[in-house]
Length: 274
Image 1: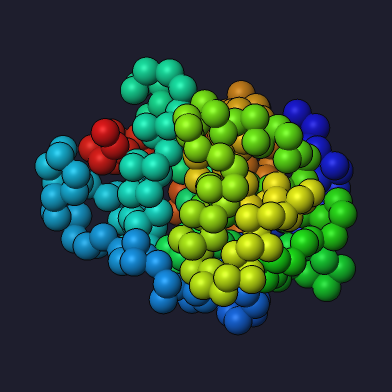
Image 2: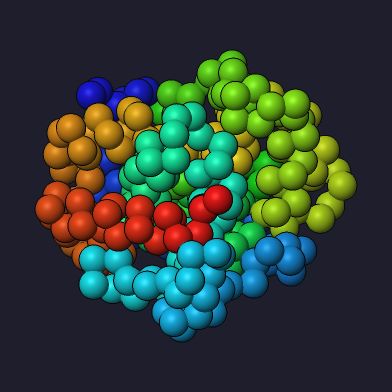
């Protein structure tokens, strides 16, 4: 598959396989997406007990190991969000939903964006520029055509239109509105200033698209079919696998190892998801 808006040309600077690690914010104070930023306003940011023997959900003790590596407490917190707020919203039977969610979870996990408080994961916004990759604030917009990775799904913003994303709302969130979803995800991202929250809720264009993609179920529904399945499962694009940073070394050094990681994530989600 050809990347939208010329993203293939930007892969050298993108978190999807760069030798540097753009998934890690270079400026910890650069807005709600910065590592450690905005966590105080999100009660859901409390991480699960990293002890793998601790019972989670209704399925009994959870083995939190993925491809032989125990997930950190912060990674566990992100997986728990996927289990409770993504899996139940997807289309298809439970088996298909678990597989789909595990594929998206593998991508985001290997991108290395989950090693920060959960509020910062919700608000994560990593922009590529001529000076490199850096996190940007909640109302900032990345340059046209630049790699721009957001949210729990670690999905790229370029190529996704507001119309496309808002069309997902009725099936994923029956009875809700995009404005309500934006207000909710902004709060989960630690946005406490009313003016900023209003800017997000009333946003248009690429800023609105970026925040819609930060709604986990919308991010996953947008990411998995075209990027994960087409490029990493049906194909084996170079940015899918590698050893450029710790998380990809652990969970996606090769296509075979990535398949193991997806299988393990599916097992965990099956224990946690309704």
